[in-house]
Image 1: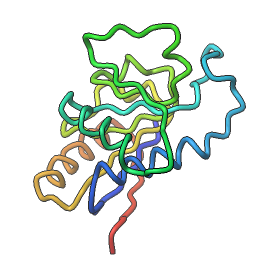
Image 2: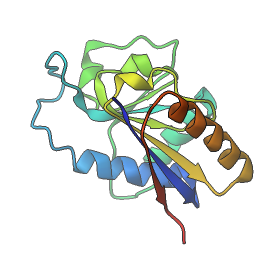
Image 3: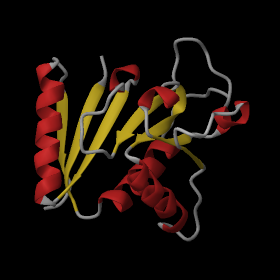
Image 4: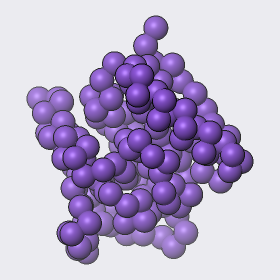
Length: 158
């Protein structure tokens, strides 16, 4: 069953997502060879699920959030077919979770419940201090809880 974690009271959602993504990639414990999938075992990496406008902003944020680092990622909107070489890219920015279900972690940046999250071992939801965003997060929390998922909560800002 997918492990779900919500991070609440994040000052800047996209910047925090960049930092969390960097941490997730650094701590990937699997010795799997990039681009080589073992059936039934998720490839270390992260799928970022959001609407196209958010994905475009996040793509720009990944290029600019840290001057001395690069997080290899792929913006794969629905009109772009995946290519064999894409499997070596550890971060996929997608509109539909099933396009990156071979990855182990789903980072959800949308307002509606994440469709297809069940294909991932873990899912992370990041929620800012914005009241509309918090309301949408409460709705997603109820959606996942009603389906029997255990949810972990972390408060980020004091």
